[in-house]
Image 1: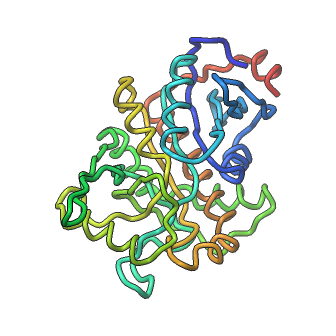
Image 2: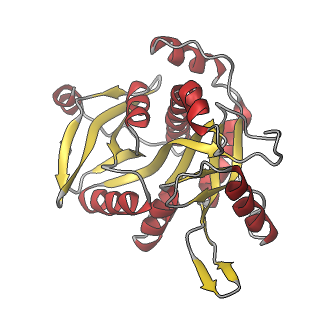
Length: 293
């Protein structure tokens, strides 16, 4: 386990078993360890990202349960223990098509980078109904610009195929990358009418436009990062495993692994891209890498 208060290059936060495994599969990893915090444990593994010249040292975490509260607690715990250059949230999400025929973007297996995380849980309940009080959290402008540059370079096609074949999976196609607003709440959305109603209310609010997908941990991470002064170090990447409708379970059976792997690959590649652009120096020593593996 890394020493307390040590500066590490990156942290990756996941919620589901599949998300954790996919993130670890894309990295050079150590052993999965049950690390207790308070009364509930979370899992972590010390991992390394390698490019042609450097090795970057980080940790992949798995929440004890899904949701924004668990995510906020975890981030608060790890920021008390270590210092990170970059903190990534990776995993799957439900896409939000603009039409009932599932047209538009993103498609199943595509990857979404959150430029804005929208907390949709806050509302005022009155006799006439409910009034939304959406809260928006903007990802750092510098990180957004770096992702735009990363997405436009298109250098990742060959590494993507190599990474997928290495883990024993032949992808049907190179996924598309999208960026925009992502809604975050406490509930698993599997209802087309509710999903579309939330998305349209948000679009009408003129805050961030029509959202691309829905997930459950981003708002907790964004709130905690804002309170602890880490907002300029977080980003979130999600693979689309379903369309948050009645077919959610069917779509997930087919697309979940593909979506998890895609989010993990592009998240890891983006961390390396940021490291190169910002001239990080590899922080892991040879002895530390040996002891962790």
